[in-house]
Image (cartoon, rainbow, N blue to C red; front, side, top):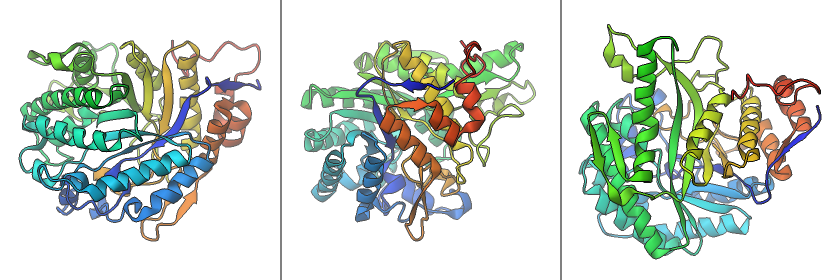
Length: 453
């Protein structure tokens, strides 16, 4: 079948980046300090120069995005640059972000700005970071400074990126700084993140009433390993509640629901003008009575899954459908703030991109209020505890020479952006192995194994 899945006029097509992952030389935050410790980062690597955006190479990367017909870009601010010590401000850092945002707009890229994407200033991390309730006031102060200085260039803000990952990876699994393994600290961090988001939301609207403000939620598809097992179903549901639901519901109704306690946070109610949705994959969980502590460990993928080269991500487009349905349940606009796969050889990314865009179209086509899609990422960058071992970029980066090389997926995504849609001709060229799935032969019913109703 020859056809095109078209998106509505004005749909936002972009890519997403984060300051520490692309700027380079962020020496005043907790992640830089973490990178200097042995065994914290894969292969002992460091962010180093990253993509050298602080040195000005954002200009050429934005040129690439614009030439690829993107009309939007999501980026973040580095708190430790703007507020290097408590209540002192580096106006030159704020000036850098003004120049960067002007540069984006001059290239036709409407900016979405994330105010906190994982990193904290060292001075704040040393005071307990997200586990110390004082962070709420510190974050509000920073947000007020940043928004007041950039409001003429930005009208869409993400307060905090993936609050659930921040809490769980930093304070339960320990792979993010400060490397804790405490459920109590995890729940304290979640509560303070909700309060900080609420304070930021109200501060932004006080300064810029017309702004659109939300959170970028990491939605992880969670399935029972054995659907017939009550214990497996229970652990999958439990993890869904504390990982996917807790922060999003708290920012919707003003009630933080965690195991053993429900806390009222009335200032957080109705503090999302949109739902930012980050979706990558879906995994499964089982409950072993002999090892109950593993109930909160990393999940697994079923045998035969379509895996990325390192096995970090499985291509599960139906999980994206469930994520969009979850987001639609909040009754507010949806922006897909991240979606992508690590793939240095660009062997799986084309079909991952094609199948996920097809799912996105289906949501738009039934009038769910999806406003845009931001692919992770524009260029290979420093992937946190995984260092440079995973490559998510549409453009390949040599971190030593800073040379960029276009991957086929960059051309594929450019065609999608330019056409404001996904066509059978594109899929046939870039991902022919899924052509029959996405554009079935005439007369066949719509394929339901790709997107389960």
